[in-house]
View 1 (cartoon, rainbow, N blue to C red):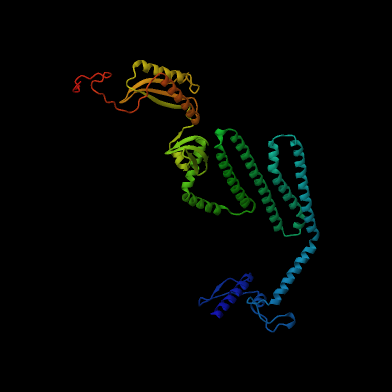
View 2 (cartoon, rainbow, N blue to C red):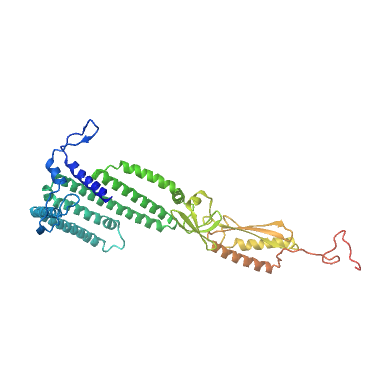
Length: 457
């Protein structure tokens, strides 16, 4: 088994050595019996590579007489490496002047670029020294000074390599030129990246000044990330196709197939992302507002790309997918113009009409003078409306001129205390669910027609 593997390995090596060297080989000629033969003209090359020399190696060279499977003696391999090293040393000796010019040019380029950056920073720093805030020009300098530095360094290094490139084959000049264009393109797109971050910071700062626009920061983040991804894709395709002359058609086709597969697998996530975009654009609520989404009633704490977090009145935190928020019914409690408060007061059935009128007047005196109501636009409504089973009801409807729930609760407390004091002072009796039994013959309650008298009375 080992011999078969060795024979097969040697056959592959011989074919791999002989066939590429047979540049002048004659065309393939079929024989009458169907066999194929290749006639190789370069016999010396075939002999040197396929026929190993015989004889023992000299002991002084340290060889054992064994042959490498490829037919190369270890001593011959080492001599080839030494010859290659001598050629490299000779090349460095011949190009010493050009290499020295390249090293000095790189150093001078770095010094010039650093000097320009230092002077520019110094000039702008002196102008900003007495400014209490960061100006737009200062931010622009912070954005572009690093890309500009490496832009200048790339040009200087390419110019410094010109004497060396003249001594090399023309293909090396093409390689260096493409590398230069690639480096310049990277510097330009790097500056664009930093400029996008600058605009992101400026827009976020303006959005945070207005509490109602806090949710715009999410849209700004989404736009920033999208633009950066688009710029990255454009940069990669631009460098690959226009500078390195690579064929990106197949890459685009593969990216399209991968994109479709990802979109199909993550359709719920994509639906949530689009739901967040709809929430941001439509703005049905803002962070901190009290909303009711389905059965969830609470204040909005944050809006993300996947879900909206709502803190319920019980303190529980709910994460609602943005797809459901965008498709569902949203009741924004915080955006009501005022807080409506309807309530009723029940008095006992023995309350005479004069006392009912007095009760309504007391309620008007309390409510019409309260600072929590806009009586000119929405005056309090007080009416004697119902005869209930066990009470006479006065219905009251008021509108607190505020959106603050806690403040409305405070005003309710004040109004209820004042009603209790005034009604007690007027001897108005509050009714409660009860049933009254009358005794026949009670002088305060005369018998009804048809009643049966009690014996002995």
